[in-house]
Length: 354
View 1 (cartoon, rainbow, N blue to C red):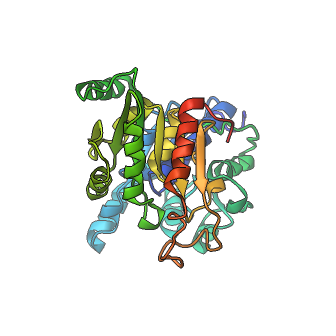
View 2: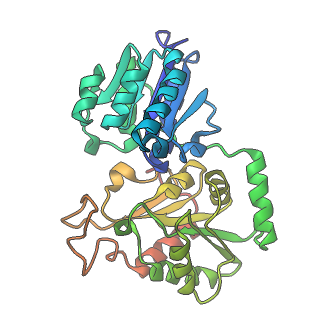
View 3: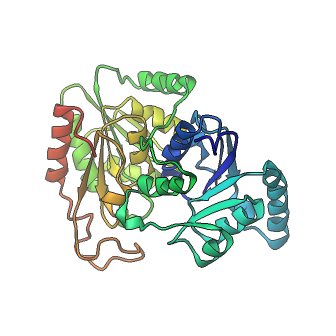
């Protein structure tokens, strides 16, 4: 793509960790189409680690939502300093994958001759941006949906592989940590992450505990129970339902350390959450349990990924409350069903393409 060679492109995604990781294929596809393009990315602070070592991204910017939403005076000062740093970059193209008012306003003030958003973005976004992608999100996986914007730039060959680069020093540090816990490379290692972005997307801790117990009974198998900040109580509840302590338990690992740990596992088990996408991005087989969200849009994009999902009538709800509290979509996923899938994945190795 000679028209993009030498151009500056800013990709904006002010969302959560998994959303941030999902734009890696956009950067890879741009870099492949135009080797001379300069790709910069703007994401929410706290999500940047998943892209920190992406070889296709030349610079990573972070937006501090806490400071941006502080008092009026503080917020104005933060945004003024923010624009003074980014506007002189003179971007040629801005791709906004956030679709909200705040991101659209930021993109407009940062400025670029070509500012791309989507038809389902906010009204303000469609007003402030000057090119609109005509695509329905429900028709695509999120990665493929985001790649549609590149067609406006003349890019038609896509690299939809989800990849996350873990530095050697981080991997070595995690390897030493596992060794200190007596977890060897010859063991079967299974990571279980019981957290999710909301309670309606979480499988019950007692059920995760039942799966962990069955795994721990298998010969030479280590269960690694992990969570993020704020998951301490949830992880403790899963451990309490195990008949023996997990081989490893942690809720304080950083994103890169978590990815390094998952990379060393034979299988990842969790809900529809960022670590499930991280598992796909580091090449680990994953089993993701889906409830109110659409798997065809949000499943971990991996040839070694499996999903369990119950298609109830109220699927794709807003996740503010459950219309079926007596039997939620997550409750419909049984322990025996998950266990059967886990056994199949551990015995058969890589699964078919997703």
